[in-house]
Length: 221
Ligand code: G6P
Ligand code: MG
Image 1 (cartoon, rainbow, N blue to C red):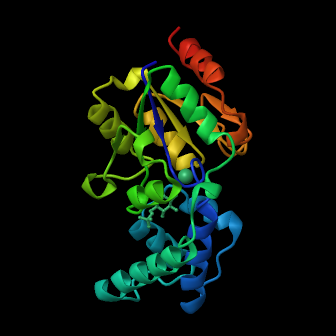
Image 2 (image 1 turned 180 degrees about the vertical axis):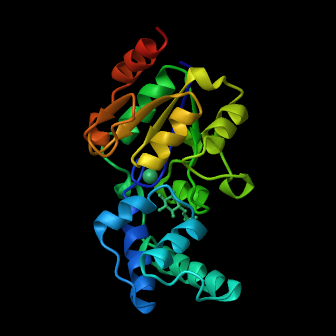
């Protein structure tokens, strides 16, 4: 095991709830209701694709021009940026700094594989930019999660073989992306929801490098 590749929203920072609120604000303007259960389908999914799913959910697919769709996506991002304007190190999820410390002490490489175009900005607000050796630019990818592209690109940027990488995710689409990249998948969250992962921690507070290493070793057999 040579590298750990992280998702951002819901893994490193408690920002998944802000994405949800920002989408809810836009959906309400469009006369669409979205609840927490529907929101699970948006986790790890790009801004454009999330908008398409919300419109489909509200039975409004095909009603808007591309210009309008772009405006909706921008409006959601404005809502989101407003919600995260006071984001700081206090919004780092429990256990993450200690886990990053363990990873650094073990000499492993670290990458960010987030679908968010706000990833670098958020890492800097959290004071975590220097902890990451590389950040994948999601705008350059052919396919979003659950496709493996973002994890494979992270491994390539680190110059590490995918089989030597572990990915950490809070969403099913993300776990599927890690598995499709033939990496070892570590999930944080609900056991039933994230069942395809190699190992599931109930929360980020439980993340331990020793456990992750033994999961990776067991997967080599
Ligand atoms: C992450 C989040 C999604 C979000 C996506 C794009 O994957 O889990 O909820 O839609 O990033 O984020 P962005 O900040 O570019 O709109
Ligand atoms: Mg996430």
